Length: 184
Image (cartoon, rainbow, N blue to C red):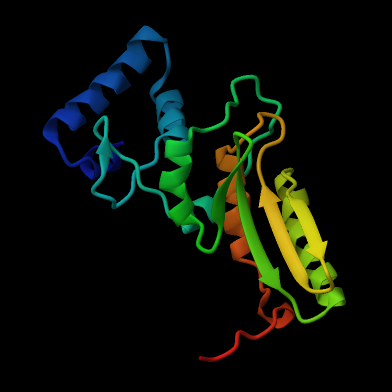
């Protein structure tokens, strides 16, 4: 707990965190162990200098790739705002934010060496998607143009799950499947 308090940069933020800790413990009857578990599972701090409500709010693609997608049937799951999506898109390099008739999606394209290499790329993505329980739209157009669209169909827009999956796809070993870029 003290590690989290020291990670905050403003003294008043430290007071707020201690105050929150005391309220959870007293007002909700939580034990110290339960409160620590809540903080470990739901409060993330990082080295960013951007503060929101006393907490550091920066994420990196490494942060997303280390996370696990949550089930999309959660009743409180809502699509994120375009403003939030614009803040997060830089955390998943090479992905684009697109708005199709009011539905926000992540989109990325590749040129593969052959039709079979495109299918191999899909197989690698499918393994990650299955393990996360979150499935993208896969497109193979022509013989070597691969496009992946990610969005949470159940909520009609983007959720953190989409950024998690994009980060995990970015971590796949795809270089041997892709055409080499022409040198200028």
